Length: 64
Image 1 (spheres, rainbow, N blue to C red):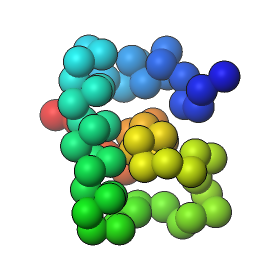
Image 2: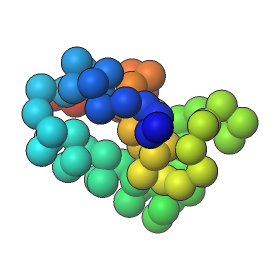
Image 3: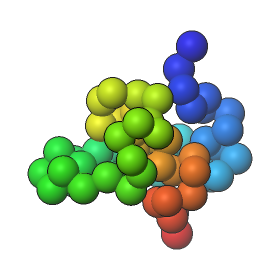
């Protein structure tokens, strides 16, 4: 099972397309800058895309 689930994320973000856009943009920022919002041990996922989705779920990334 994937974490975080798509159902939880779609309660935060209105559209799957916006979710894909925001998470891919955030994961690229993580790769380029190596800047993370949470501590390394707090992430469940090891890859940047999963970590970006976790940040969206926790509220560290705001979708306008």
